[in-house]
Image (cartoon, rainbow, N blue to C red):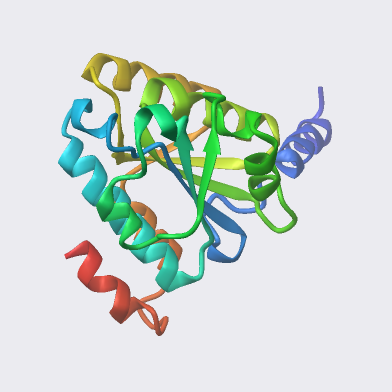
Length: 199
């Protein structure tokens, strides 16, 4: 195989890759998955997971990133926890499917014109977050899973879920990493508003 044919194949592969590995706020969407009253207390480091999810929501709202909040069978598992409701009171979407995109209304909100990247926070990492990530990847979306804002009841389940998502092509990030990637430039006007969230 000559050099030109190798370069041609490389160019073809790169053409199929996402145009940018960085998250663009204008084409991103934040999903907050199942942070509900009867589930959260059983999650490993639950206070930290909720706090970091709220941090992500606050940053998303400052930066104009849409937020979708899901609830798994709220009649049985209770409503979304108060700290999340304080920052996004009116955008909850109910489901019974573990993968969020298995519910048509949620899928329509996520697989929508202009959305190229889905940022995931919530619980449980090895069930609903995992299955949502795999569904979103199958739809051709870039997926970023915020490590410090997802959790499971058992740490080994969370680790297994994160490993599988990574192997499938999702990016495993942190809340600070994601927020500053969304900002992109310290000269951006919103940077001063976001800065207290990452200090």
